[in-house]
Image: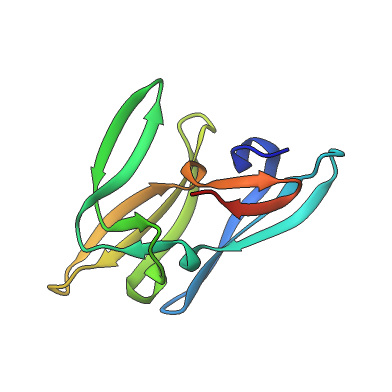
Length: 130
């Protein structure tokens, strides 16, 4: 059942440990349709890149670039983040990671990242897709 994780998952939430790590948790369906407890440490895949245009939402084939600091293929964004949350948006089509990220000047910048861009459900397990 590989594919965007949120379509086959429920109880999507995060465990944010300020200054340390952020873990995405949910119950994801396996190939038999059973719900499995699933988790992935987001800090292994997401970094803070100080203000580049990195976040992309796909809405009816329209790309919307949002200014911010999140970057895929980075790591340890939680070390410079506060007010981290996850929200289901756009009618249930997007699982958005929200946070304020510190830039090099010490200012806090709000950013949002669509977790469905790279996180998939692989038989009840959350997996990062490059």
